Structure formats: C-alpha cells, structure tokens
Amino acid sequence: MTWAPDEVEQAERRKIRGSTHQTLHHLNKDTPTQLKELYNYNQNGFCHHWDQSVANNRSLQPFDMWFTHHPTWVVTNETSEQFCVEPGNIHDHPHIRRFMQFYANQFHSSCDRVHVRIMWGSGWGADFLNIQSGLVYALDNQIPAIIQDSGIPWNYAANKNDSSALTCDEGDTTCYFLPYHDCKTSAAKYWDERNKTGKAELVVDGCLLPEASIDQELGRTAYMFMTRKMLWFRRAVYDYKQTFKVSKNITANSDCTVVHVRRSDAEMDTQGRKYLPVADYVKRMNTTKLSNPNHHIFLLTDDSNAIDEAHEFFPNLNWKYLDRPRHKGSSGGWENHTPSRNPALEAIILVATFELVQECSAIVWGAGNFAEYLVNHMLLAHPDGNVESYRVDIG
Image 1 (tube, one colour):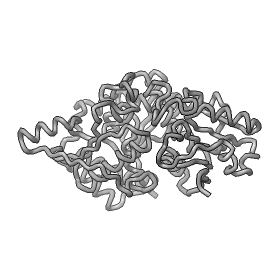
Image 2: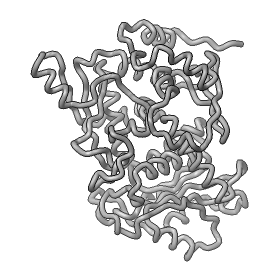
Image 3: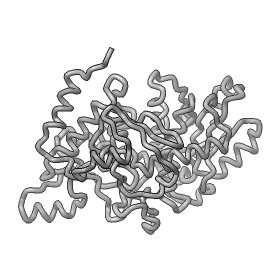
Image 4: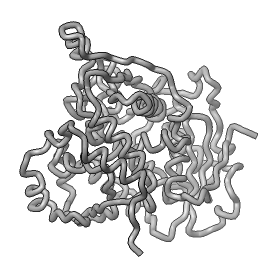
C-alpha cells in the first residue's frame, strides 16, 4: 500500500511551493541539469559516488544548495563509495513536518523583520540550546532567525582566544552545516538599513525557551534542521567514524555503554558540576552488559587523566576511546573545547561522536548540556526508548 501525505503535510508542501519568495534564486538555473550530470539525479531518489577527496573541498557544492531547499529529502545510506538520498515522508520520518515549517519560515518569510540571536561561544550544547530557542521563537513569530556572532567567530569555527585556524570565512555554523536562512547575515547591515529606510527591524531576544530544549520534540527537530551536514563535512564525519571502528575492531555485532566524563573544567564550575572518579561511573554500569564479550565501554572524556585512571583501576574492562588531543586535568581552563587547536577537527569529532553513541544501548553521565545531547542522540536511534541511562551524580 502506497503511503500518502496527510492534509497537514500537503498544506505545508503547498506553502513551500506556492510562496512568492523565490527561494531557489540561490541556484543556477541549470542546477537540475547539474544534479543529473553530477549526482545521477532522479526525483524518486539517487545515489552518488564519493571518495575521501570530497572532505577536502569545504565550499558549498551543487548538492548542498539543492539539499538546502529540499528539506523533505533524507539520506538513506552512506558507504565508502556512495551516499544515497530519497524523498522522505512523515510516516517514516516524523521530523519532516517540522523541517517543512522551519524551512518555510526561514526561507519564505520577509527579511524586513528578523530575529537575531547572538552566538554565545560556550559549549556545543549551550550554544545549540540558544540557537534552537532562536529558531523556535522565530517560528512562533513568523520571522526568520539569524545567529549573529559577537564580533568574533564561533569557537567551533575558529580557536576561542585568538580566532586562529578559521574553518570558513563566515566563521559560524555554516562552515559545517547547510544554510538556514535567506537574509543578510550581518546585524549591522540591518541596523543601517533600518536607519535609512525604516523597513528593517531587528527583534533581539535572548531568552531560552523550555520547548526548545533538546529533550523536547520542537527543540530536537530545530537542532536537526540546523545541523544538516554539508557534503564535505558529511564525508569527513563518515571517514572519522570508519577509521575509529576499524582501529578499535568494532563490528556490527558490538554493543557498548557510553561513559561521559567531563572533568577538565569541573573544578571551576559554579553550577555544581562535580569532579568524580572513574570508579563512580563504573559502579553505575549494568554488570550484565559488562560480562558480554561483544560489549565495550565507549569512554568520552576531555581529561586524559580519566583514561589513565580507567586502565589503572579497571584493567579488565574493555575500554575504547577516540585517539585525539585532550587536556590533562584542568590545564585547558574554563570551557576550552578545542584542545587540538583545530576547530574543524573538533567539530568532526563531536558530530562523529554523536553518531557513534547511537550504536550503544546504555550511557552513564553527569550534569552538562553536552551529555544531554548525547542521551538524546541515542534516543533518536532507539525510538522505542530502549536506552539505559544512569546519572552518576544523582542517587
């Protein structure tokens, strides 16, 4: 039986198709032809050959521009040789309804009045909670949202203290993810235009909205909409995951428990984040899982001391972790999330981590926005809610 979109989805699709705002003006008029030639485009779905060289070209590709304006399409498969996409539907991909709403608002609303959020430049979870609130606020008020930097690039697009190693000229989320609006990117230009013509209006509101949090459907789909990967970034994340799996001998039959130990700035935290020994995390684990020979512990930490501690006190447990630069103790200082001094690599590692934890069935974690994002990425991969979640700092 062929699935058909319901009345709500049909209305959203008509809204996108019927808008007088020419969203596709970004695209060369021959883009469909380009897609057919470059990507074997077919309206029912298509696959395209790619290799590791794709990750070296960080500019927007024809596929990126096309994918930006086709929010109902989904990636169905990624291998070392090709990736595939096809039209999605709400039955199989319930996020699509929200995607259409966000897309219509961000690309089909007038840019004379916009909602501006200032990028915090904090941690990944805190930054995206702010971004999600901006997107939700804008949707409620039917105006586009723009995430404006505070005069320096986003600290995941350039190093925090000196803005070195800039990933792209924009210095924002669009270094890695698809464009999310069709308006001018500079708030200063809006102020100037408003003063000259009286038309442009900035709606600045920094309040965090409860419904925009990552554990709420609206906030979660706002995050998913804002993190649709550019082609180069998609390939880079794929390669990083595959390299990790091969090097650690992780197979399709493997199961894992995620252990997230954030400690490098815990002693400086004024909000109650605790510096806890690895032993406290081990105590929370499901002992039945630990006895499974196909089970491993995926240790995520910003403190290299935690890895040494795990091996010293629990040498018989099957620890696996990313081979990456880390701080040692509190050497990195407060909210220094780029120990490699390579922001692009840090972003690749973070997004790869979110996807790798989706293959695990349990997590032990403590207070922190990033940990909450880990939990919710796992739940996305287990819509039945079958994820064991243990708080190390509660109970």
